[in-house]
Image 1 (cartoon, rainbow, N blue to C red):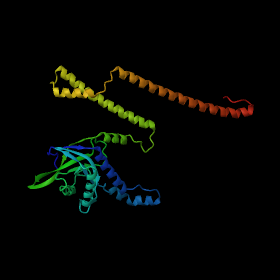
Image 2: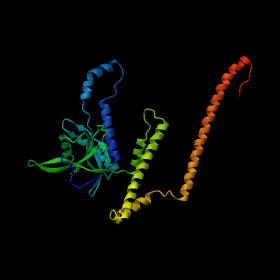
Image 3: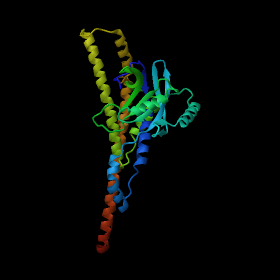
Image 4: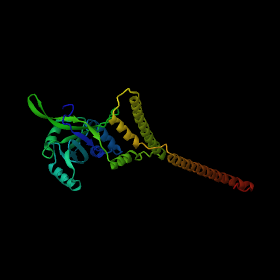
Length: 320
């Protein structure tokens, strides 16, 4: 396998493809390793089959990726699952053609661009599947998701491979070469991913935990925006001093970016900000008063209950 591709294609990958592959792998893995029930039978099975489960290889899932190609730009929008026959190392052709026909009815502009699988690296058997799809797409792409967790890795565990014909030992052979890609999103995908990221945890997280996570995300975004603005400011100062040459194209890009920043120095913004700030303080103050009143009512009720018991003995009246 070569290090990088030389085709010159630009790949854009949408988050929906990554979510589909991850969901496919998670479902297959959970079906192969169902949750163990409690009981003596479970204990016996776990003792006898513990080594077998530990030695069991993680499952591999397969599917097709669909999208559009405009010139030298390949944009992968979606994917669907496929049936795999491990004995012949091939995909179910009838199922593939049927799924392709169904997708054509809903998304007529989408074409099969290639296929996907899971694993740490491309294998020799993957080339058989790759060649089988060349009658549908003469140059299919191979999207590989690595499901193993690596906390030290900062990049997405996704690789995109192309196939190129190389001469090895005097014999022409197809090999996989890795291609670079960028993540492309639309508004609906950004909203969906943000919604999934802020789902309430299953361990019963409180509203305070959700608010803290939300505020932490906002703080990180503002911090990143501030750092990027500082970089632009330092660049403009260095250009003004003559340390770096002036480039009109970069200045136009900087000017365009600065126009997108919100203008927060206007008098209207100050009035709206102070009004919203005062409303927030008022709501917080009313909430504190409500909590104090509730706590006072509980204290009075407890005092009356205790004093009523004492008054029955001494003949005194209640406090309130």
